Image (cartoon, rainbow, N blue to C red; front, side, top):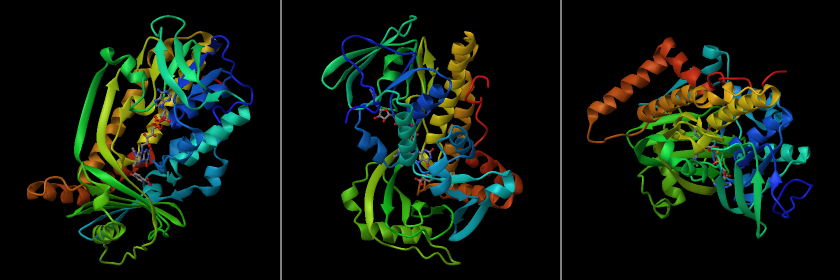
Length: 410
Ligand code: RFL
Ligand code: PHB
């Protein structure tokens, strides 16, 4: 099936909408929903199949402000039923566990709920609103972004289609077309890390109630989960690691070693039904807008997954853009749109710093440099023993407030 709205898109002339949204990941779908609730018309286009975006396994941690927003805009019912609320997390090093009490320190919590579940809930909302969401589009090109009437050109179901709009939201992820369209105007800031994550999904029960981040001499490991029957776990590996070198037994053995706790941690082993390798990178493109094109989410910035921030940042950007577009359509005000980049970037850079900090503190860096390891252990001792340091970590992890409300005015 190529589209979600019950009313079909006809190919006999340009389609007109207010905001064309390129990409149906968390950023694009959240933006579409927030604009719909403000009465702003959108068309969402996506290169992949619906089944593909609904099954793509990625993030799993929602910050408190993300959860609050999803609930406020009525896409939080299943999240409330199936999401796992965690009031803290464990940092494990020198084979001992140290809990960071998020709720005790900040009053907030995080929710473990798969990104693909958020995507499914938002697609359902789009379908219920009967608004257009075109899957499997090809040859997407953005034109006229410096004028008043930008256009998106694409091919849908074998036919060329032109979307005329007031604004384009580039929500097409790190490998999309939006950022390259304005590449010449962007300054980029980037860092590659000399390691990757091998991630698994396994049909095993979580061995602890909360996530465990382990910093071990063999490298980093993370014990996470998706449900009471499914765990999501990660191992630090070489950046060019070959999955074929990681049969199940090696993965379990390495997880056992790195997650070992002197006081007991019974890692349940079982069927691994998904394995993948994720490179680690930090990236920011500035500004996040040019003319009538706005970059949202991974299209503008990437964080390494150690801080669990990527999807949350994408939804925060969507919230800021929804607020700005709301102001434009309600009152003709351009001020909020003009400051979109500035409003987003302050929080984006905070998350960039936090993700870099968590990554640097927890991963095996240079094995030949014992000085570096001593610094890491000192930092770990500090964040797990000082209330001030633990509060800072907790405050960043549960999520700082979104920069704006999603709606212009009630
Ligand atoms: P997405 O999700 O990449 O969606 C972009 C969509 O655009 C489509 N697309 C196009 N559509 C139309 N025309 C084109 N020319 C197009 N080109 C591309 C794509 O098919 C896609 O559907 O970006 P978005 O919406 O900005 O969302 C960002 C998040 O997906 C990402 O930041 C997170 O997954 C990162 N992340 C995590 N984030 C968290 O908040 N918490 C976590 O716990 C967390 N863990 C993770 C993660 C990412 C990981 N990987 C695999 C990178 C763990 C991992 C392992
Ligand atoms: C996940 O469950 O996929 C997950 C959890 C925490 C992270 C990254 C990923 O920091």
